Image 1 (cartoon, rainbow, N blue to C red):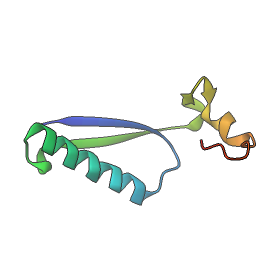
Image 2: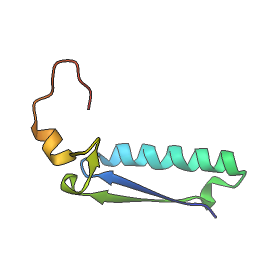
Image 3: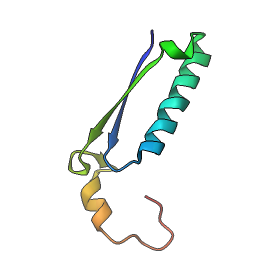
Image 4: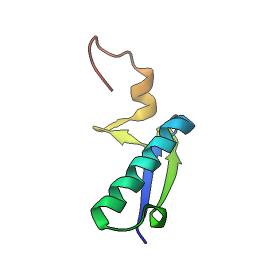
Length: 72
């Protein structure tokens, strides 16, 4: 029985999390040759103050103005 843990900064919708869980379950089942119902996925949501990307705390990154054309 595969177990998949996903760590995310808070702020995703229930629908986004549902789609993520479904996609991961399908991919794991296909890759491992197991039944999809046997795949366990859980999401751990973290405060944006506890997550960094590229050396920048997400809460700080989200407050800063984005340069034109930049995707974060």
